[in-house]
Length: 499
Image (cartoon, rainbow, N blue to C red):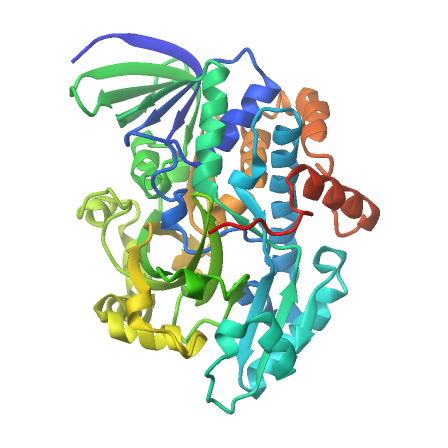
């Protein structure tokens, strides 16, 4: 073991989209700070941020039906969709700033224009979709959304889904052309390339073994070189734990009171990717359906056009699954070792409550390829088995905590846990995650640097013109930002011809 010890201002654990975003924001706000990044894999964006570990990204709540809930009185609650859309607009503004400032180039390598659609079948669902459309389309954030239950119109929008359909059930869809497809793996790598030029010390194949508080209030990390096994000591005034599913174990090691009574429930995913270019060419949208009864929100079926490696791809999924690992490259003991005396009751309560979910996930794991093809055929009636391959997606760890809803409540969302003094923060949870990364990291900055935030406000507003303002209540500003970001990010141009 090496006894070398280094001091730094900020340590970021994990080289995913969250650390990349936080590091980039901090380097713009305080260029003189020293930042170190430790990532146990050999390159950036390999776990949850990787493009092949996400079936569909670019979440602006334009098409995800689980963000708009029907209330008992029949009205539609769109508050969550508004919140997520506003947060996505913040990401778009920041990316636009980075491109304009020439800090990153070629935005088409990570973001592409793509219509977002919701599609439902059956009278009851069609009535829900129409009400949802009426509620959303009145809102400036969802301007330009269309609704149709006309078979001819739908054939024009989604020919691949309509061809060969024999069901007499009524179909309807909404479509909005201002949606995007975002490749977060590519963006993560771009941001880390940029951080390298700003003298950020990024150490790959380095795993954080322990985190503990020093007598002067800093944090000391023991960091192991994965190849040589040698261990070094690093201290920092501020630490961000952005290790995806691996964050929970590291948070528990800090011993902060805020880390108690929190557990994690891993959910894995599988999706199908089309290997026939002729089929891929027939579809150009993200189309979200409705989750089956008992299915978790992150297993809403969707058929997504994606742009990966300058190539148009078609993905369907995700099929949920269960593995006790917290990371794709994690250990089978991850779940067991995350159970501690302080969270065992929380975990047991969740286990008792979520029996049906566990059963559902295990059933999903057992599906054969042909059974998965049957589910795909509900979307694409003419789908052929030989045109589709299975891809294992990334692991997601849903947060379990005690809430007003009771002990051991499973949370579907992104959660930031911060020490009372703001010296350490950890990001837990999953969707909509990456799409709202800039908003989430600004929240971390606000919570962890309360003394500096006032001084930083001018710079933050330069990067994010809508900072501190509700875009929904300022349609003029919204239009101005929309036009500017679309132009800078190349979203107003026609779809490029990718093979």
